[in-house]
Length: 283
Image 1 (cartoon, rainbow, N blue to C red):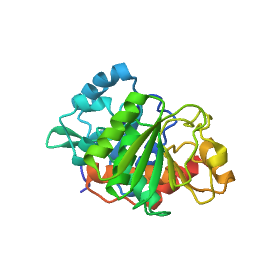
Image 2: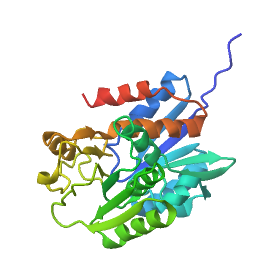
Image 3: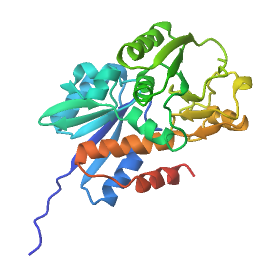
């Protein structure tokens, strides 16, 4: 006798603004299908003023969790029932998980970036320059500091946000953090070894370049971008032309997505399936 029909399905959301160019839905649903899970990941355009309403909708519909991307990674915290350890240190959330009836904020961005970076270079005892001071910058800089980076320079247009992140790093990690105001094309110092763009500059359909002094790019630098779409941003194109070793945002996206799926479902997804799904839409 066949099993009775059931349309039961579990749902995960993704909130952002802008968000339609975000490829996470394609990657996560490929993993769900590959592992035979009746789960669905759905992307929603949610403006800052509608974030509370979106969260109330998630709770009412019984979603098992959601991702939140720009500009919600910090703002979402006030709506949640609690924070995981890393999210509490960073003050930023990109992954929310339903646990025992409570929506708990986690941060998988920094961990995903770190896994991707370590395929090229170990950040321990390295000097890092980070463009940006928002949620992604917090996640990446804290994980780099915890991984042993010796110095972290935060370059940002907003002085207040930049100093807030530097204070967090200096008070809660062993890395030596400093701030530089971002005015015009920022030069990279000769002792910097890793450069990371954590801003939304270059996210499709924007084709802007990160304002960096092209003459200070060197062949011994590792240059990374957290932007997944397009994988080859203007920033990475410029760095590659200078001979730098570059890391695109797909590796970070796959790794943080893998951790998120583990949080939501309890399974360990196949990252190769997830990377392949992303590469098919960027060919």
